[in-house]
Length: 288
Ligand code: ASP
Image (cartoon, rainbow, N blue to C red; front, side, top):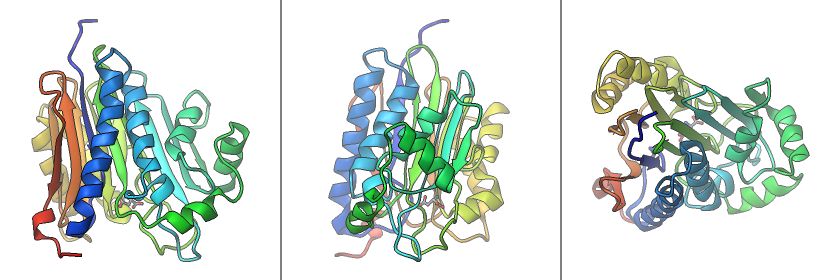
């Protein structure tokens, strides 16, 4: 297989942010990029890179994932996460998962199994058996939580493999058991040999619009990622806002966009290794 250059895009979600949240978001995105770039620039896999980037953001209470997860209507943390390898179509996903700091790693641990998606207590038992969850951890997370935005990452490695990962604490204040788009392929993430994507925003709107699928199919049909993202976002018209997408194709070309006020993202590549972080729309934000 011919060698390609590496590239990575991370997002810190699409939700209204205050100006005071800009610096922590920038720092968190930079830290996540640093994790992914260290792996990709030394020849590591896109799959390792997306997991490492998402784990960094799950550690950071700035983001609504892992440590910063929002709580549901009963004050509990329930997380959704997914990870997918584009070259093999291997997928792992968990939803309504309690008591874990790193749902993306639970999702990764599920990749070799027959089942691709585990929910609720079943997901917890799987995570606990792998040493990735412990009863009571969720209470700590709930105390620390209320990060603003879901996280995700797409990457291309030097072997030409694409991967994607997404992790979230959900929309906050929702009914227990609510599951959004983040763990579902074709909605909150997807990766194949052609492209990889991660979505964020109103999971219910993303599902109604089949957002991720619209984007992937557009790239498969020859559109560049930026045009494909813009095309997919048109399907959100008339639905509740604050949704966004990042996408990358097998050439490392990237696309991103959002329908809500703001989106936080960053990217780097072998050709342009300096990290670029964009807090789109933050200049319109309220102070505080
Ligand atoms: N998409 C996530 C969900 O609906 C939330 C978000 O991205 O902010 O659970």
